[in-house]
Image 1: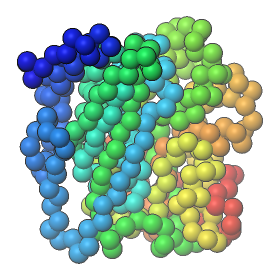
Image 2 (image 1 turned 30 degrees about the vertical axis):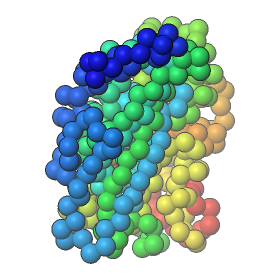
Image 3 (image 1 turned 180 degrees about the vertical axis):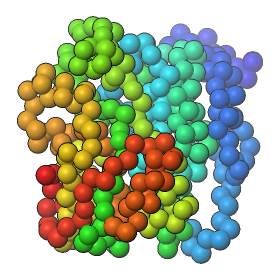
Amino acid sequence: MENSHSASYAAAGVDVTAGYEAVKRIKPMVESTYIPGVLGTLGGFGGMFAPDLAGMKRPVLVSGTDGVGTKLRLALLLNKHDTIGIDCVAMCVNDIICGGASPLFFLDYIACGKNDPVRIAEIVAGITEGCRQSECALVGGETAEHPGVMPDEDYDVAGFSVGIVDEEKIIDGKRLSEGDALIGLASTGVHSNGFSLVRKVFDVEHADLNAPVDELGGKSLGETLLTPTRIYVKAVKALLKAGVDIHAISHITGGGFYENVPRMMTEGLTARIELSSFPRLPIFDLIQKKGNIPERDMYNTFNMGLGMLLAVPAGEAEKALEILRAAGESAYAVGSVVRGDAGVELV
């Protein structure tokens, strides 16, 4: 590749040598995510992975894809790009674990106006950290320059992940029953949803994002909003390894409680969540106050302090809470499954 250079392509705005420099910088980070099953190394035309199917009767692949959304604008305004990749991984693997599947590998796609190898390496540093947190391998990716389509300093990040689960162990809500306990896992903040509203509320283009904010305990607005999405893979895997019978899981993302919780329920059952049972993070109070946003809209947009909701048999709730807390999660008993067709009730 040292001999690969096109003056004509460079004149059109694409510097292929910058791409090679970026690959050189990220290769050690990528290889740090490798787990058993990875074949080859960075640089091939396709990432290869040989899953261990031992003990599985009928392996099922579960896939997820997502991006980071307009949270990226905060990263650009603050010129901080080393955590946004965690968000990208989280949005994919947190969905996959909802089905009981363990993420195996991840691929990223970075589109940019101009390839800055240092910035690309910062973005990939976050992606590799997200992969390590979720115990999956980064097996490939793509960085594409879009001169004339995107401003030079702009970029977008998306990702794709694949997990695996034995068919008989899929978590799909079919075993949900009245009386099941609901357990909530704390979020780290806004995560990666609702940022178009957040940016409007705080007028982030003109705000001092680095100034300490009393309502946020002295932390700045920028630091608070850029806090990476919590990855729940290890915690859920710990429950499964301990034999906890998880009946359903919901990842609280865009659409908040009213959109995501009903997705884990089955017909005739409703998740009744007690709002006083978990702490509401200060950032959400600030958003609501600053934007004069109705209470229902808040719970229909944001996670409000809970990033994931699980349903387990009532008799296993205490055991599940102990395991989750031992795994480093802030976990709460937040309600129960009741009869009804609302899907979710917030009381």
